[in-house]
Amino acid sequence: NNIFEKLPDIFTDKKPEKEIDYIKFFGRSQSEGRVTKWIKSEYVEKPDNFNSYKVLLPASNGSGKLGEKLSNPIVIGPRTCHTQTFMSFGMFEKSEDAESLLKYIKTKFSRVLLGILKVTQHNPSKTWAYVPLQDFTPDSDIDWTKSIAEIDQQLYKKYGLDEEEINFIESNVKEME
Image 1 (cartoon, helix red, strand yellow):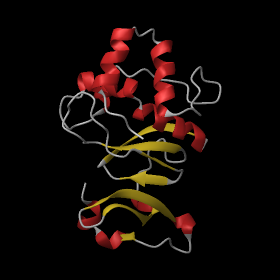
Image 2 (image 1 turned 45 degrees about the vertical axis):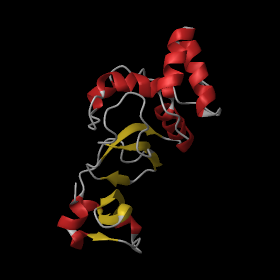
Image 3 (image 1 turned 45 degrees about the horizontal axis):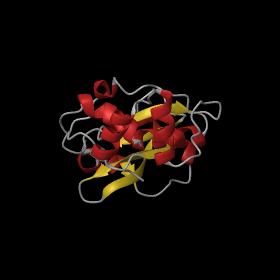
């Protein structure tokens, strides 16, 4: 998780002239916070979603309290890797589809379902087991161009939530922008 401090000589802060030999590497530096650096491609074992747009979320965030906000998820583009400080979601050809996933992760609906299994700061993939997979393309039954609050309303309707369930979510889950 502190690869930038352990191996500072293999990373550069500036985009090299021969970009083809280097890839972007997103992570967290202890001294600088979130940073993007560059590394020779040969040093990295590339994940399946390497050539795709994806959403990054810190692998640990919050305390596990139901309804808390998540720590600034972001979309990163193709040919970008990340440190183990983060976990990635999705494998999209279009940035718009990744942006739709980002909105979904920020909904109260998805975060209340995440909160059922996420009871500590740790956020492993198994804590997302109750969060239903969606179609994030323009063909989806959800209109991802809407605000996060409007997407929540679409999700409540899609999954048949009653007024009591909706009120519980709206009262106990913090809004994310």
